[in-house]
Length: 110
Length: 117
Image (cartoon, rainbow over all chains, first blue to last red; front, side, top):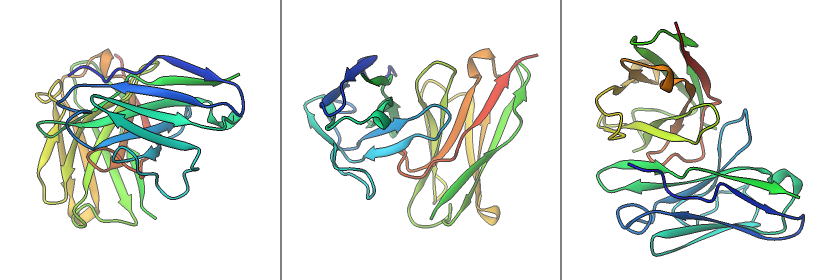
């Protein structure tokens, strides 16, 4: 199975908003509401930002929001802060009881 | 607070078998209706889901690795394990364990496994 498609990089200045896309197929992103987003700082464990397309776990700032339309899910980071600079990954349940990740997006805060 | 910790050899020879264990505290691998997953990240690359085990014992695997991956659980030790056979240099990665089939909010810190002779 091929990875979900994410842009390799994204950037924005402090205070700005950035949106990262995650494109799959009707067998994964488009077919199920089991899309998650993670923030990954090198050397650390990935941190869950969003589950089930739009659900934000307690402790995750509301600057992080997400949505889905068709086969594409999106993560928006509003009010960019320096500490938001990290790699971001999406993941989705796949028909047939599997899971797939996106290729990852490196977010740079300018 | 659920905590997970990976353990196992940091160096494995090509063609041999990689074996890792994830120890769980603050939660049970045999109850709660949870899945427990293994994920890896090769150097400079993205995350890859390897497979998971349900607390009832059923397993799901990444189709691209299914022939080489086995995940099992030891309820008495509250651990679950990953076995990856016939490894090559391409299996060099940081290996993570996590709770959830689509991994959720509890992850281990990861352990680097290098495949080299």
